[in-house]
Image (cartoon, rainbow, N blue to C red; front, side, top):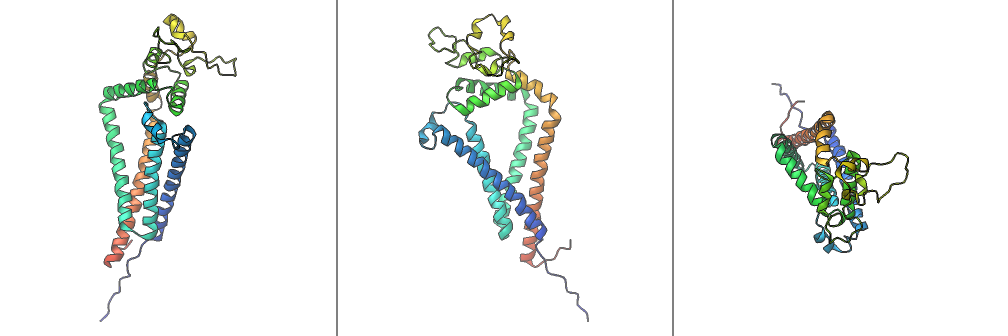
Length: 272
Protein backbone atom coordinates (compact mmCIF):
# COMPACT_ATOMS: atom_id res chain seq x y z
CA UNK A 1 0.00 0.00 0.00
CA UNK A 2 1.32 3.43 -0.95
CA UNK A 3 0.72 6.55 1.08
CA UNK A 4 0.94 10.06 -0.28
CA UNK A 5 2.70 12.44 2.06
CA UNK A 6 1.35 15.98 1.84
CA UNK A 7 3.97 18.65 2.33
CA UNK A 8 3.65 20.52 5.60
CA UNK A 9 2.25 24.05 5.57
CA UNK A 10 4.78 26.85 5.39
CA UNK A 11 4.67 30.56 6.05
CA UNK A 12 5.47 32.48 2.89
CA UNK A 13 8.69 34.47 3.35
CA UNK A 14 7.60 36.62 0.41
CA UNK A 15 4.43 37.84 2.13
CA UNK A 16 6.16 38.05 5.50
CA UNK A 17 8.99 40.35 4.43
CA UNK A 18 6.81 42.29 2.01
CA UNK A 19 4.51 43.13 4.91
CA UNK A 20 7.53 44.02 7.04
CA UNK A 21 8.86 46.36 4.31
CA UNK A 22 5.42 47.92 3.90
CA UNK A 23 5.23 48.64 7.61
CA UNK A 24 8.79 49.84 8.10
CA UNK A 25 8.02 52.66 5.65
CA UNK A 26 4.78 53.32 7.55
CA UNK A 27 6.67 53.33 10.87
CA UNK A 28 9.45 55.64 9.64
CA UNK A 29 6.85 58.07 8.26
CA UNK A 30 5.16 58.04 11.68
CA UNK A 31 8.49 58.80 13.39
CA UNK A 32 9.04 61.71 10.97
CA UNK A 33 5.56 63.15 11.67
CA UNK A 34 6.01 62.79 15.44
CA UNK A 35 9.47 64.38 15.26
CA UNK A 36 8.16 67.31 13.22
CA UNK A 37 5.23 67.82 15.58
CA UNK A 38 7.34 67.69 18.74
CA UNK A 39 9.91 70.04 17.18
CA UNK A 40 7.13 72.52 16.31
CA UNK A 41 5.82 72.39 19.88
CA UNK A 42 9.35 72.83 21.22
CA UNK A 43 9.81 75.94 19.07
CA UNK A 44 6.55 77.37 20.44
CA UNK A 45 7.53 76.52 24.03
CA UNK A 46 4.63 74.11 24.53
CA UNK A 47 6.88 71.27 25.74
CA UNK A 48 8.42 73.49 28.41
CA UNK A 49 4.99 74.82 29.48
CA UNK A 50 2.23 72.27 28.84
CA UNK A 51 -0.40 74.69 30.16
CA UNK A 52 -0.09 76.52 26.82
CA UNK A 53 -2.01 73.64 25.23
CA UNK A 54 -5.14 74.66 27.12
CA UNK A 55 -4.77 78.30 26.08
CA UNK A 56 -4.95 77.63 22.35
CA UNK A 57 -8.28 78.94 21.05
CA UNK A 58 -8.04 77.92 17.40
CA UNK A 59 -6.99 74.82 15.52
CA UNK A 60 -3.33 73.94 16.09
CA UNK A 61 -2.02 72.13 12.97
CA UNK A 62 0.56 70.40 15.18
CA UNK A 63 -2.23 68.39 16.83
CA UNK A 64 -3.15 66.89 13.45
CA UNK A 65 0.51 66.13 12.64
CA UNK A 66 1.03 64.42 16.01
CA UNK A 67 -2.23 62.45 15.73
CA UNK A 68 -1.43 61.17 12.23
CA UNK A 69 2.16 60.43 13.27
CA UNK A 70 1.02 58.56 16.37
CA UNK A 71 -1.43 56.38 14.43
CA UNK A 72 1.19 55.62 11.75
CA UNK A 73 3.84 54.84 14.39
CA UNK A 74 1.59 52.42 16.31
CA UNK A 75 0.30 50.68 13.16
CA UNK A 76 3.79 50.46 11.65
CA UNK A 77 5.20 49.02 14.88
CA UNK A 78 2.38 46.47 15.18
CA UNK A 79 2.77 45.44 11.54
CA UNK A 80 6.58 45.14 11.69
CA UNK A 81 6.70 43.14 14.93
CA UNK A 82 3.65 41.10 13.96
CA UNK A 83 5.23 40.10 10.64
CA UNK A 84 8.69 39.31 12.04
CA UNK A 85 7.46 37.47 15.15
CA UNK A 86 4.50 35.92 13.32
CA UNK A 87 2.24 37.28 16.05
CA UNK A 88 -1.41 36.84 15.09
CA UNK A 89 -2.70 39.30 17.71
CA UNK A 90 -0.55 42.16 16.40
CA UNK A 91 -1.36 41.29 12.79
CA UNK A 92 -5.10 41.23 13.53
CA UNK A 93 -4.79 44.58 15.32
CA UNK A 94 -2.97 46.05 12.31
CA UNK A 95 -5.43 44.59 9.80
CA UNK A 96 -8.53 45.52 11.80
CA UNK A 97 -7.37 49.11 12.31
CA UNK A 98 -6.59 49.56 8.60
CA UNK A 99 -10.05 48.16 7.74
CA UNK A 100 -11.67 50.57 10.22
CA UNK A 101 -9.76 53.56 8.79
CA UNK A 102 -10.72 52.53 5.25
CA UNK A 103 -14.42 52.27 6.19
CA UNK A 104 -14.31 55.67 7.94
CA UNK A 105 -12.68 57.29 4.90
CA UNK A 106 -15.31 55.81 2.61
CA UNK A 107 -18.15 56.87 4.91
CA UNK A 108 -16.79 60.43 5.19
CA UNK A 109 -16.46 60.70 1.41
CA UNK A 110 -20.07 59.52 0.89
CA UNK A 111 -21.44 61.81 3.63
CA UNK A 112 -19.49 64.80 2.26
CA UNK A 113 -21.04 64.17 -1.17
CA UNK A 114 -24.58 63.72 0.17
CA UNK A 115 -24.53 66.64 2.62
CA UNK A 116 -22.53 69.24 0.73
CA UNK A 117 -24.39 72.25 2.18
CA UNK A 118 -23.79 71.03 5.74
CA UNK A 119 -20.11 70.41 5.02
CA UNK A 120 -19.79 73.89 3.50
CA UNK A 121 -21.37 75.43 6.61
CA UNK A 122 -19.03 73.47 8.90
CA UNK A 123 -15.96 74.50 6.89
CA UNK A 124 -17.07 78.15 7.02
CA UNK A 125 -17.60 77.96 10.80
CA UNK A 126 -14.22 76.26 11.23
CA UNK A 127 -12.47 78.92 9.12
CA UNK A 128 -14.15 81.80 10.98
CA UNK A 129 -13.25 80.32 14.37
CA UNK A 130 -9.63 80.17 13.30
CA UNK A 131 -9.73 83.72 11.96
CA UNK A 132 -10.53 84.76 15.55
CA UNK A 133 -7.40 82.93 16.78
CA UNK A 134 -5.16 84.06 13.89
CA UNK A 135 -2.60 85.83 16.11
CA UNK A 136 -2.73 83.26 18.93
CA UNK A 137 -0.67 80.54 17.26
CA UNK A 138 2.15 80.95 14.72
CA UNK A 139 1.45 77.61 13.00
CA UNK A 140 -2.23 78.47 12.55
CA UNK A 141 -1.23 81.90 11.26
CA UNK A 142 1.15 80.38 8.70
CA UNK A 143 -1.51 77.87 7.63
CA UNK A 144 -4.12 80.58 6.99
CA UNK A 145 -1.58 82.80 5.22
CA UNK A 146 -0.53 79.92 2.94
CA UNK A 147 -4.16 79.05 2.18
CA UNK A 148 -5.03 82.65 1.28
CA UNK A 149 -1.92 83.21 -0.86
CA UNK A 150 -2.21 79.94 -2.77
CA UNK A 151 -5.92 80.36 -3.49
CA UNK A 152 -5.84 84.15 -3.89
CA UNK A 153 -8.66 84.58 -1.40
CA UNK A 154 -9.39 86.52 1.77
CA UNK A 155 -11.57 85.45 4.68
CA UNK A 156 -14.15 82.67 4.62
CA UNK A 157 -16.73 84.42 2.43
CA UNK A 158 -15.23 87.92 2.09
CA UNK A 159 -12.50 90.18 3.52
CA UNK A 160 -15.05 91.46 6.05
CA UNK A 161 -14.74 88.14 7.89
CA UNK A 162 -11.51 89.55 9.36
CA UNK A 163 -13.72 91.78 11.48
CA UNK A 164 -14.04 88.70 13.72
CA UNK A 165 -10.41 89.09 14.80
CA UNK A 166 -9.74 91.60 17.58
CA UNK A 167 -6.63 92.95 15.85
CA UNK A 168 -8.37 93.57 12.51
CA UNK A 169 -11.74 94.61 13.96
CA UNK A 170 -13.06 98.01 12.87
CA UNK A 171 -14.34 98.87 16.34
CA UNK A 172 -13.65 102.46 17.38
CA UNK A 173 -12.30 101.18 20.69
CA UNK A 174 -9.58 99.13 18.97
CA UNK A 175 -6.06 100.55 19.38
CA UNK A 176 -4.46 98.03 17.00
CA UNK A 177 -2.47 99.40 14.07
CA UNK A 178 -4.08 96.61 12.00
CA UNK A 179 -7.55 97.98 12.75
CA UNK A 180 -9.89 97.70 9.74
CA UNK A 181 -7.22 95.87 7.77
CA UNK A 182 -6.49 92.35 6.58
CA UNK A 183 -3.38 90.13 6.78
CA UNK A 184 -0.67 90.63 4.16
CA UNK A 185 -1.60 87.23 2.65
CA UNK A 186 -4.80 88.85 1.33
CA UNK A 187 -2.85 91.40 -0.70
CA UNK A 188 -2.47 91.36 -4.48
CA UNK A 189 1.29 91.18 -4.93
CA UNK A 190 3.04 93.69 -7.16
CA UNK A 191 5.16 91.68 -9.66
CA UNK A 192 7.74 94.49 -9.62
CA UNK A 193 8.34 94.05 -5.88
CA UNK A 194 10.56 91.25 -4.60
CA UNK A 195 10.11 92.12 -0.92
CA UNK A 196 6.81 91.18 0.74
CA UNK A 197 5.08 94.22 2.22
CA UNK A 198 3.56 92.92 5.46
CA UNK A 199 1.69 96.22 5.97
CA UNK A 200 -0.08 96.17 2.61
CA UNK A 201 -3.41 95.26 4.21
CA UNK A 202 -3.50 98.12 6.70
CA UNK A 203 -6.70 100.24 6.64
CA UNK A 204 -7.97 98.53 3.47
CA UNK A 205 -11.48 98.02 4.82
CA UNK A 206 -11.75 101.74 5.58
CA UNK A 207 -11.78 102.26 1.82
CA UNK A 208 -14.83 101.84 -0.41
CA UNK A 209 -15.38 98.14 -1.17
CA UNK A 210 -15.32 98.97 -4.89
CA UNK A 211 -11.62 99.81 -4.53
CA UNK A 212 -10.61 96.68 -2.63
CA UNK A 213 -9.84 94.71 -5.78
CA UNK A 214 -6.89 97.00 -6.53
CA UNK A 215 -5.12 96.01 -3.31
CA UNK A 216 -6.51 92.74 -1.95
CA UNK A 217 -8.25 89.55 -3.03
CA UNK A 218 -12.00 90.00 -2.68
CA UNK A 219 -13.02 86.36 -3.17
CA UNK A 220 -13.68 84.29 -0.04
CA UNK A 221 -11.68 81.10 0.54
CA UNK A 222 -14.83 78.94 0.66
CA UNK A 223 -15.72 80.17 -2.85
CA UNK A 224 -12.11 79.58 -3.95
CA UNK A 225 -12.24 76.02 -2.61
CA UNK A 226 -15.54 75.38 -4.42
CA UNK A 227 -13.93 76.58 -7.66
CA UNK A 228 -10.70 74.61 -7.07
CA UNK A 229 -12.33 71.23 -6.41
CA UNK A 230 -14.05 70.69 -9.81
CA UNK A 231 -10.85 71.76 -11.63
CA UNK A 232 -8.77 69.25 -9.69
CA UNK A 233 -11.30 66.47 -9.19
CA UNK A 234 -9.15 63.92 -11.03
CA UNK A 235 -6.15 64.69 -8.83
CA UNK A 236 -8.26 64.42 -5.67
CA UNK A 237 -9.83 61.17 -6.89
CA UNK A 238 -6.39 59.83 -7.87
CA UNK A 239 -4.97 60.53 -4.41
CA UNK A 240 -8.00 58.90 -2.76
CA UNK A 241 -7.72 55.81 -4.99
CA UNK A 242 -3.95 55.54 -4.39
CA UNK A 243 -4.40 55.70 -0.61
CA UNK A 244 -7.25 53.16 -0.80
CA UNK A 245 -5.16 50.75 -2.88
CA UNK A 246 -2.26 50.99 -0.42
CA UNK A 247 -4.64 50.20 2.43
CA UNK A 248 -6.22 47.28 0.57
CA UNK A 249 -2.73 45.96 -0.25
CA UNK A 250 -1.77 46.12 3.44
CA UNK A 251 -4.98 44.34 4.45
CA UNK A 252 -4.34 41.62 1.83
CA UNK A 253 -0.77 41.02 3.06
CA UNK A 254 -1.84 40.86 6.70
CA UNK A 255 -4.79 38.52 6.01
CA UNK A 256 -2.61 36.22 3.89
CA UNK A 257 0.09 36.03 6.57
CA UNK A 258 -2.52 35.36 9.27
CA UNK A 259 -3.94 32.51 7.15
CA UNK A 260 -0.44 31.03 6.70
CA UNK A 261 0.26 31.17 10.44
CA UNK A 262 -3.11 29.59 11.24
CA UNK A 263 -2.44 26.84 8.68
CA UNK A 264 0.96 26.04 10.22
CA UNK A 265 -0.49 25.94 13.73
CA UNK A 266 -3.35 23.70 12.58
CA UNK A 267 -1.11 21.43 10.51
CA UNK A 268 -3.18 22.03 7.36
CA UNK A 269 -1.82 22.37 3.86
CA UNK A 270 -3.22 24.87 1.40
CA UNK A 271 -1.66 24.40 -2.05
CA UNK A 272 -0.69 27.71 -3.68
